[in-house]
Image (cartoon, rainbow, N blue to C red; front, side, top):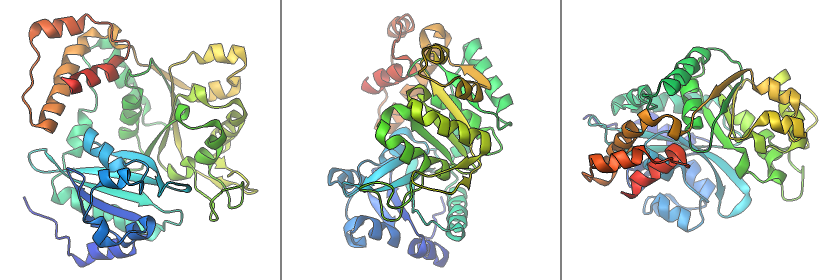
Length: 376
């Protein structure tokens, strides 16, 4: 395999001038290279950074969590919101990309963290760098996307076939299904088959964001908007997802007082930051998901009727695993292959055990099955 020349002048220029952070790690999370921006963000020298691991940086509180470590575990693109140096006012979004060798083995992870004042000039240069590196390492990312879901069940096949048809539009999609059924997998599939497939996919779970922070996280805020706010203000998820897709998981958990603001964005394509007096145009495709019965919430007055109809333009349902038993054995084999390769094992599951797993109800759905296979 040909190796990318990390001393290339073009690459060195990116590491020096990129306004955010670039970190390149091996498949164990050991830092191999980092940009000047990484040093500024963390307050650590390049020597300190290149002598440590992402796991240690998380343990030491430099990062609250790591999209890089998530990427290593999942072997797919990941995006995370990170707190720097345990300071709630220092948050940044990190985007990690896996790089594979000719044998489809994960060998590198490239993590980009986007600063608030990220310039278009450097974004274009980083995008070009990513394309060059992926070609050089002969990444199998595209082939993985072709197998982005497992489906033998007619109902699931039908759901993904329908999703592919509607992906070419910009209409809002609402995905219904129990927790763990694969709603985010379906949302990513829509994005990957849409006209926005080369832009960013930003997932956010509304149930994990405290009500008091949700407005500032989704819409951003201006400097001085509230006590403890960053002096430079902050971009929200809509700005981060501009030209791409924003996936609002567990939309039923969005506070009632924020729902009119979301409705306004959907209707006008404009956002107004918390504490702001001006609006900004954004071009974002919305996919929402829920495990709740939104119509019942509308009747109860806990979810706005106008927002429901604005989001529910194209409804798609992901059935629970107990109603798609044809998929259980293929999913078992799929996850076995993933974890056998990851942990260098050769675990097998006999026919009797598979039969028992096929007849289990799986209340946690595909997520529960995945966790069981990982523990095997």
